[in-house]
Length: 289
Image 1 (cartoon, rainbow, N blue to C red):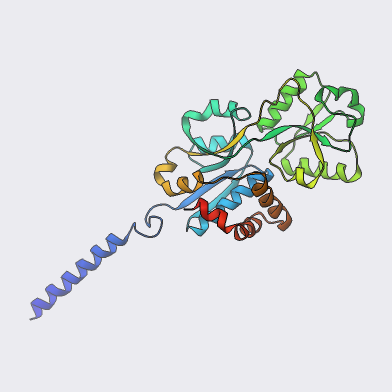
Image 2 (image 1 turned 90 degrees about the vertical axis):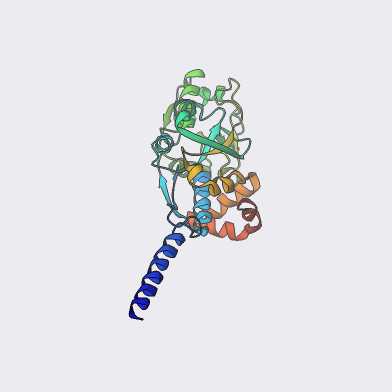
């Protein structure tokens, strides 16, 4: 009898070990599978907004998400080195072509989520008597010979340096960051002072202020782009469900504009993104099918 009880105990013990082993790897999004995701972002209004939006959405799906903020070129490098998993914003076929040509062998490009962007040199609309980049030199003193730009590694910065050369502008491009550029624009706009900045759409500035692009007859800034997202090599194999969700992702001026506005109004990107998601649950549920 004692021997039979010992055998029964041993059988139950082995069964428990087997069942425990079988349960590993079957916990929601994969159990033993690594559910950490690192998103690289730039400090640009739309990039901050959508990166935080995806952080909230993926965390709802039990992913552990980290956001890493850096300039544009380091984001591409981080993707190719497998230090980042996702970057939400790639402008093609024009703006980010130099980076794409350099790194395309070592990353995966995915679907378009926003169509028909714009970028270039922008002035407040109250500056009624200037409409073209070609007219800037005539107003050099009024502008202080300065174009207020964003981070040095941005494709927009490189294109603006090309524009200065192509149009023979007697201006200095002052690089800083997206928020620093917006701070200067906001101050000048409030005081109705002359200012020319590098800017792009989608951006909340165009709903917050009355602005206009300077005409670019030489097409230095090119034709409109679409915005894609990219991932490191192998991310799709590791997390096919994330790629499925993100490939369903589509935004337009209204939806992206409202997201950026909510993020700006709350002053906290994560809280703003969460508030927007709560208000647009039907839309995001379509993405997460």
